[in-house]
Image (cartoon, rainbow, N blue to C red; front, side):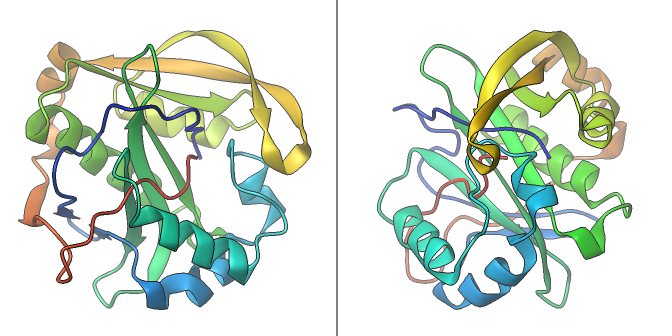
Length: 215
């Protein structure tokens, strides 16, 4: 899981949130009916303590509040990571920090760890940021105690830029976080993973959504 925090006025997604398809995954906006499934999957301290803003415990009210906010403000791009049968396996998203490049974040439910879903979803977000939205660089962060997330970022081509202290809501304290950056030129040279397919540009009700997990 990476950390996504402090989102400001610029948007990651532009006007409409697309559906992003990869070989095994579908990244889509959250629906009202997803609240129970999201709660059951994300309510684990091992997830929360590796994200910036996910509380622990994570309640149904937290999930409902998150989904409600997702349709009131378009400053972040939020996706749920699902399988072909619409089983939710995690969440991811992106936004723009106040004085920095757009940043991606993600989380994967414990039963789905070790299957490569985080890398696959991250690459979809990266392709969307560079290929769909035209950004020149994107950033990400991972707690220094989370080598699995660091490996995901490195497999996606991110370069380490330093360590900063970041407040982690689940532990009510700050922790050291490795910071990473990926430039458009390096992304272009790594395009062997293939362009993500844009399946649609909005939910059926026309609502917009922003990034779920700030993770």
